[in-house]
Structures are given as structure tokens and as C-alpha cells.
Length: 498
Image (tube, rainbow, N blue to C red; front, side, top):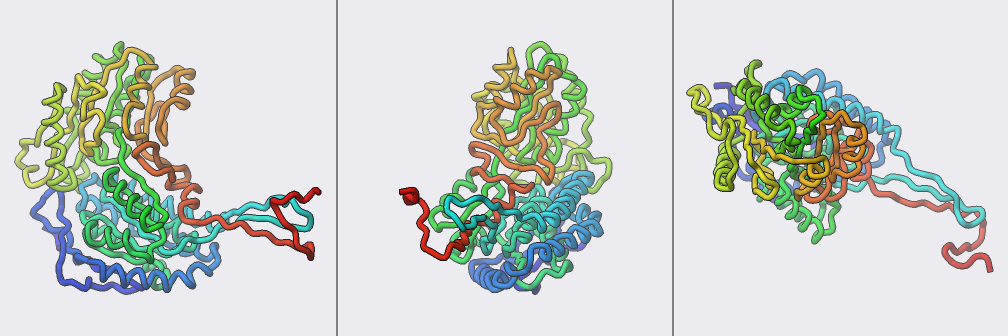
């Protein structure tokens, strides 16, 4: 057992308890008896205080020159680097991701900080010609206001930084609502923001449940933008509320990603990709490979290799350097995966390996589930269409490239995609025909680099892209400016040539 941490809200530059004495807990998924942190069960009253603080801070923060705002972001990157191992160790303990992955999560946040620090000098607008004489026209980016950032537990440092850092460099203030399961990671991250010297009220942190804090943020008239990452079901409710309350909304939601392996593929390379794509982060990624579409000519050989390699994967506590597959984040998620295995069996899928809770006594106090491969899956089965969010990989056999693309696209989602082939013509057809926000050629269905757009189509998102320069379009409004120096009334969009 390790010391239980006490989390507080961070409002207007100060660490504060919630108005209510009620608390929630964050537990170690590898040992559910261990309480990692207690956190305030905040409510609408706490949200009200945070919104007021963020509004007050916005009045002056938006006037700070963008390059000066960027210096704070750069400092955050430096501090993240100094505290990388501390954050990674806490992350592995709190949400169960192996240490190598936790370090990568923090590194992504570091990269994000340095990237957006550079964007502070590149918030470009445009100048253009006017249709009238002695008239100048240009566009500029303007901040939006107070942004609510609602983030998940699976990337508890990277995803908040994807949202917070571009929002801040654009001149907005933020209220950060993290997932309960990673409240301690959120506290440490906001401590870093505090150490970077950001003015009071620019960054605010509110702990609590989605039903209480999340709902209060969505309904509050003082929130100008909501950026949400989570399930498509919850995202639909977020979008509905934001539409009714006239808030800008950015949604990053589910995925049912597929890797295609053609008959001419480098099978060893494709095997490494499938293992990492399916079982990295215990399958708890919106970019996880949950469908493996195999050409019939290589299916038997590839499946045999895949099962053998899966059998060798080591389960264990995330803080153990030997662990390759950690636990699921909590018992509710474990039950979800168990229930989907019952669905798979009832639909006629065959369990080649896994499909159950491990019998190892050392794993009995955690939310562990064996890496699982399902064979005989058809595109219409629920396990081929619904997001499981666990270490479950469904094999689907196809006869041709055209069938493979049709099966890949036959899903409500469209986040990440992958095809392994040596045929350059097929690769370019796949780039054109796959319906997804991300396509990998000869790589697994992982996420994006921080300077490239991240997001998807269909029920995966609502058209926005996070990361890269495209994130600036989420957190800024375009303003068109005209300067008429003719000294007389000129009327645009009227027949000026008569």
C-alpha cells in the first residue's frame, strides 16, 4: 500500500476544497483495495465559482500578447520534462498503463507544449484584396472565452494538454474537469501549470462526477466552449446540450478501428502492429485495433503466429517494468468486457485465446482480463460494430482488397485505420477510399503526432480536429476587418460599376 493522496479543486490560483464535504475515490486498478486518492465531490456551486474566476481572468489574459502567453506554455513543457518520471509512476499506479506507455503519455504532453509555444508567434490571419478602391481587408484570430475541458482517464496527461495548451496560447481561460479515475494525475498536472506562473483564474480544476460537474459546465451560460473526449453516447448528449445552450463544442469520441493485412504484406511487421494496436493500453484507446481484417491466403498462417505471440504477453501491475498488459481501469470496465465476451459467444464467434479473467492468484485483486482473440467474426456481429474498450481483437476474413475496404468502412465510427501491403497502388487506393480521420500504411492504428490533426469521421467526432495547427480553429473565432481610407461612403456587394 502507498500513501493515499488528497486532491483539491484549483480555482483562481488557489487549492480549495469543494463546498460539500462529500468525497469520491480513485483506486489502483491492479489492486482495487488500494485507494490512490480522495477527491472532492464538487457540484454546481463550485462550478459557479470557477466560471466567475475564469471570466474575470479572461478580461486581462486575452490582452497578453500571444508570444508572451506562449512563454508560459514553453515553461510548462520544461516542467513536464522535469517531472516526467513522477507523472509516469503516478499514472501507472492510478490508471494501470505500463510504465513505458505512461512515459510516452507524458512525452506527448511535452511535445505538445513545445509545439504550441511556437504557435504563439504563428497565430496567422490573412490579408486580401478588396473589391473597392482605397480599402484594406484582413482576417485575424480572436479568443473565444471560457473553455470547459472534459477529459477521459486513458491519456490523463496528453489529452488535457492537447486541449489546454492551444486554448491558453489562443488567449482563452479554462476549466478542466478530469475523469474521476485519474484525479491524482490531474492534480499533479495542474500543479505544474501553477508552477509555470500562469495568472490566477486562467486555469481552474474541478473534480467530481460527470452528472454533477460535467452537467453543470454544459448548462452554465458562462461557458463559451466545451471540448469533450469520451464515448459517442455521452458525446451525443454533450452536443445536444451545447446546441440548446449555443455553446461551441468539439467532440472526440469512439472508434472501431481496423487493420487490414493483404496477401502480399510483410507478415512479421503486420504481426507487431496487430499486437501493439490491439493490446497496448489493454485495448483502452479510441485508436485501438479491435478488428483485424485478414486476406484468406494468409489468414491461417497469420492467425497461428498471432495466437502464439499473444500467449507470450505478460500481465501484471503497471509499475512492474516487466508488465506488457496492465489491468482495465476499474471493475465496471472489466464487467463490460466480460459481458461482450458473452455476446461474442452467443453470436457464434470462437475464442481462440483468452476470453476470461486470469486465474493467477497474484492478479485476483485487480481488474485484469486476458488478451483475447475472436475468430469467425462477421461484420454484422455486435463485437465487430460496437466499441468494447478492452483487450479483445476480432478476426474477419476477406477475399479481396475491395472486400477488405468495404468491411473496414462498415462501421458507425471512423477514427484510425491501417493496411499492410507492399503494393503501392493498393496503398494509394486505401488512402483514397478508407473512411477515417487517420490512415496508416504499414503501421498500426495508433494516434497522431502532435503537429498533425487528430480526429475522425461519422460518430467519432463532429468535424473538428485536435492537435496540430487545426486545434487553433477550435479555440479561436475568425474576425474580418475592413479599413476604408477613401474618405467617402463605399457600398460593398452593391453594383458599383453602374
